Length: 71
Image (spheres, rainbow, N blue to C red):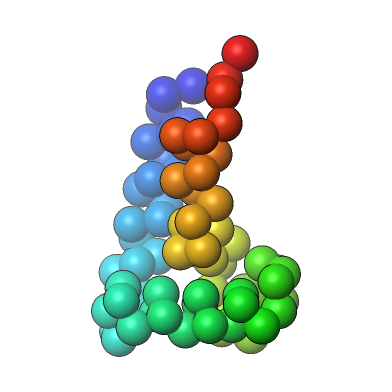
């Protein structure tokens, strides 16, 4: 299970490297788009970003990593 989490984090970091405007600028655009659409898929299509990047930038990754109990 740990290996899959490491692969996921590596994928996220690699996708950030392809962002010429930098993380903060892209994050602002993602959050502005998500505030209007309230839909991750629409935000992905609008900004041409992969799911894991949008998921991370709108805060769901942190929520599920730290707030949701794992039984």
